[in-house]
Image (cartoon, rainbow, N blue to C red; front, side):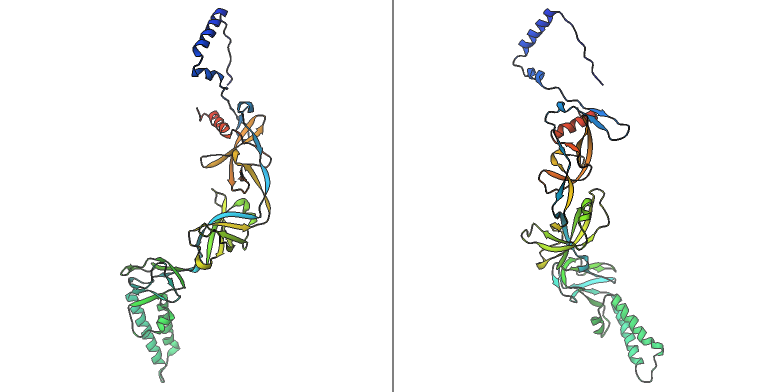
Length: 378
């Protein structure tokens, strides 16, 4: 809408008197400075039949507004990202109750180091006594059938021994414990399935247990995983088996070597990143689960799109830039960015194209004009 200006004529003497009074009354008054302020810039919206909404703005109305081009630059041969250290789940094992009973005794506590086969927790359950009695009975029958003059039709006795032994194995008993059986007992010591560190302890002496309850977890830290995020436009630079280095704030002077083991088949739609799983050697067990690490991946050279940080406005959990569409028209564009090694620049993942010009001077004022044109400002 264009405002119309009207000219009003008055006698010369009246006009002169008004001017004299105005000068006399306003001299030295703070209100006098208002008359010298520049006029408020006005932006108009331009709706297109097809294409994005644009804003009409005269550059002269926004002193200091400048432009910069979105350009392509060479990325360094090292791709950096951050990640978190976790256990290699192939190096973690749990002791799980396979019976209904109670915990009689425990020999280790959280963070203790254990050896493979070491007794960890003693379980009491009538199921153990019943299964052991069946095994000893089957073993006695088998020994009897092996005596001269007694036939074992079809190897029935041997089959009964195998079935009874298998039942004890399913209850969690080891071969050495089964071989040492002399009499049925309701108490059995469960042993460490691997050597390592007790990383979880849910066993309480006297506590009741049910089949499926996890009592202890044991893990090793000789090699750990580092799970990190890689932006989708960098995925072409990484592959399984690629060498990498990890550095932590706890040990900033020590570099831990490793390689990419797996790349996630999924992309996070919010961050446009994919997770990579890195296997990292951990001498001395210095790397601990849940630690943060900086990962450096050696990659081939490539180019990337960058834009000045001054061009970006952050609001509503997103970044925006104002793109020069020519003829005094500007488009607000949502931009997805990633970290960049160039000082003062951000890497553009999506939203901008090489060669486009973006506003870098008075960006905040341009953003205010955009919202005011939408009726969102004063």
